[in-house]
Length: 191
Image 1 (cartoon, one colour):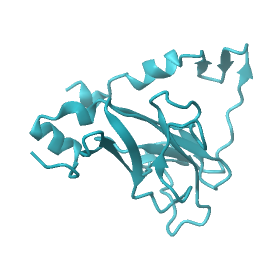
Image 2 (cartoon, helix red, strand yellow):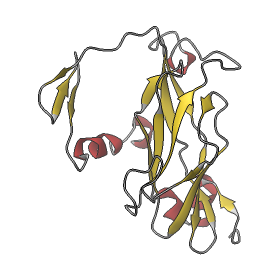
Image 3 (cartoon, one colour):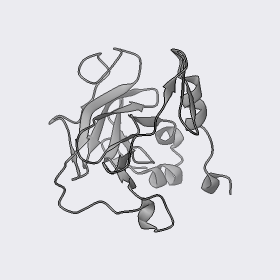
């Protein structure tokens, strides 16, 4: 078992039998932004109990963000509520002059939607009260939407409901619908 201060990857945590590194979540808000740098997003992390700090390392070169990549839970900066156990950092935006262009199609497949790309933001590392550090097993991602893709029209039906051409967004104070979407198993997890 690695000692205090060692970073466990998700795979190493599984092998070591330390599943505590796998009981956490992250979310980019919003989850898709324009790739021309005109829109911002914030990264939020919900770590396991006993975590005293969370840091983002290895920020993707296509992104610009704050100089300090330590996520906060003090109600300052990008953090919305102090002491709620949700750590936040940001805002981030795409660098409008990247060193290389984003792929023209999702997953670089011509059979996938044009103008959409998913980018790994970086690596989230949690520090526990014991001093042990554990990486998030799944790296946070944000979607990049080409500026040439028009915004989908939507109507506000009420403060709780908004509708697009093929999607209805239901919002409440507890974000129940978002939690349901986040917990839908992916096809690869069903095998």
